[in-house]
Image 1 (cartoon, helix red, strand yellow):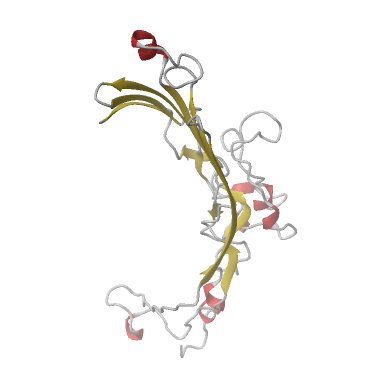
Image 2 (image 1 turned 45 degrees about the vertical axis):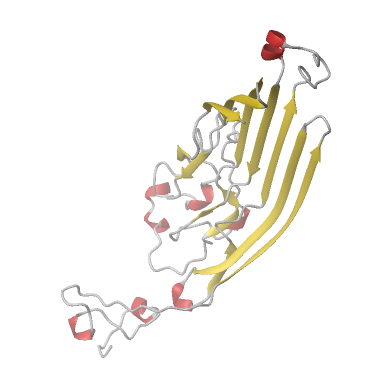
Length: 289
């Protein structure tokens, strides 16, 4: 660093005294120097409360429901590495709401039930021993991670942004994330500019102010419902045969996934893939003896 002129960008680096080049300790033939540090200064904070309701009935029915409300924040990321300050942010693993419910219902027909308790033979084999089950889970999507610096209107607060993946577009025509961007994209462009081709929205060595996560810009919420129909056959010598038909993701719900987060891309805002599997039917049998 003995030159008459030193670039400002070099002076703002975390270790400005280390310059690239073979005469400054660079790796031979690469023209660059690598400096590594390891620190244990990060932290995270998790707070949660949960409710659990469970009921078992005398006739064999059962019900279980849970709800968890949580909040996860962390300080594990440098928004601007040169200033050495960890960003206090909503964690990319934050899932504020989770609901699960499960139930088993034995149809009141057949041996030991309200109707047909004296059935035998063919009547019991066909009409008795049927059960239904269902499980449901809901989970809030997690915050999207903005890995690169992006321009955002300085008169707006990016934390006011909200995603609406899977909801209706603003004009009521179409699904947000598919037929229109999943969030308001207007703040990512300069008013009166050329939009995504405007060179002024390309951040270079600018100090970053746009957070790496936003509390309300999240992936698609999860809704999954599984249903099952079971038939139990009573066999000699205290044996039982249970035949099951199950529908996994019975509503064929699609979790929209991986929206484009590059304001300079023509596809900025919409999603480009799904996360879960489509409806799946399973057939199984179990012999108990």
